Length: 294
Picture (cartoon, rainbow, N blue to C red):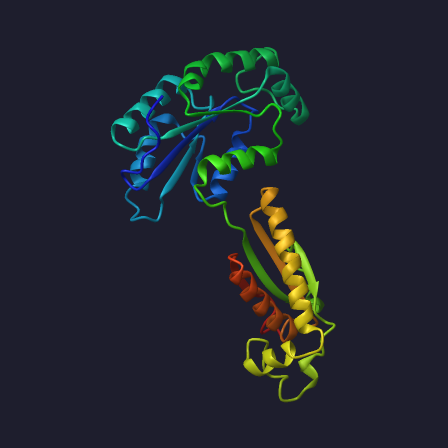
């Protein structure tokens, strides 16, 4: 076993490997969500070059995860050699190895009706056995071995986050999107709020030309009966939902706020909700889909 991962070059390196069907894809997505630059199915001979390139990005890339599997031919000996070379150069990569029982792997392959990459013309169990033999040495030398036989996708994500995200859990990221119902619902919205219960500034001549980003419209909208109460209750709801999303491994939330035309009420309310999310420590982006369409 090597010494714990170091950051002598300002770069953290994780090598993800393991048995086909044991959860490499889920691990890769999780590492990407917590800030790793992830490269999938990279031949071992190119790993050192990738790490070297990452170390010369002036801090833009600080974490690299490389996913390797038996699709990279002659990969076992090559990979061990590359890991040893990176070790000697001070990168000290951590190796994450994912495994599962034969019975579980067979069930997973049969559920997706795919052949094992080493099965060739034989049986599924033959492919699994061949891969175990090929990966035996790497399994023995891995820094972290995770048996996913009895783990759900969410359980696996949580375990990887605990091991690789650092002291703080990965933050929820939110996009608050204003829109006009007359132009249709946003297709990518996770949650939709309708603020047409508020009086429409469109019917006030001096406010009609302005938008919800202008102070006079914003102040008018936020001063209406029910606006403040809605913001308080909805912000609390978002805290509840956001915490649940994080527990279930969902890191991105798109919140759509709609009014009739997407110009006044939805814009003002979206901006205010975004401010509150930022105040709660949520990485938040505001977008106004239909602003300017009228």
